Image (cartoon, rainbow, N blue to C red):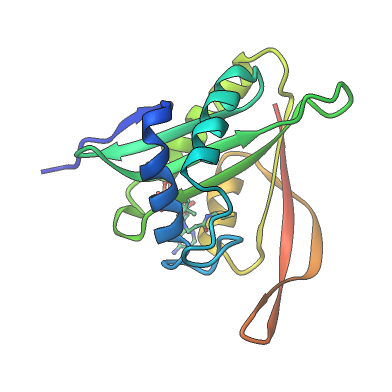
Length: 170
Ligand SMILES: CC(C)(COP(=O)(O)OP(=O)(O)OC[C@H]1O[C@@H](n2cnc3c(N)ncnc32)[C@H](O)[C@@H]1OP(=O)(O)O)[C@@H](O)C(=O)NCCC(=O)NCCS
């Protein structure tokens, strides 16, 4: 049977599971900016983040849930400064077991639609490791273009990795 995926915005009560999710997936992949148990927010900070994101007209978090468990998560984070508030930074992760099933695509589709309708966001940007082929192809599928490269930005076990800076004009 196909897993039924529910997509919804978080409520403060989700904070504990969101922090646990991030800390777990940090250990599943080297493509995130943090390693296992290195997610920078604790539960109280995540609760505050959920409330403040909900109050910002140009930031959003969308959870992907299967059988009451968070299995994926997408974020658009934007500032409030007049000159930069039109740019949203996209973040996304789907837990290993559920990758390749279209969940990342659906999260991105929903985030793009949300940005188009918020009346502020006109550009979505992100950076991703150059060797993260799946993510790069996924972003290109939605029209993101490579705008530049950042050299030696990530260091893992003594090896440096470059990042692509990618952007989508809405
Ligand atoms: C990147 C990530 C979010 C994608 O989520 P997902 O649910 O697995 O993605 P989907 O199944 O919706 O999309 C797969 C898309 O990736 C691309 N893709 C999949 N497998 C691929 C492969 N072997 N080679 C190249 N591209 C591939 C395709 O564009 C594909 O779309 P299509 O099926 O319509 O052709 C997920 O793999 C992930 O969380 N990875 C680890 C964390 C991460 O890298 N986050 C992004 C940091 S910038």
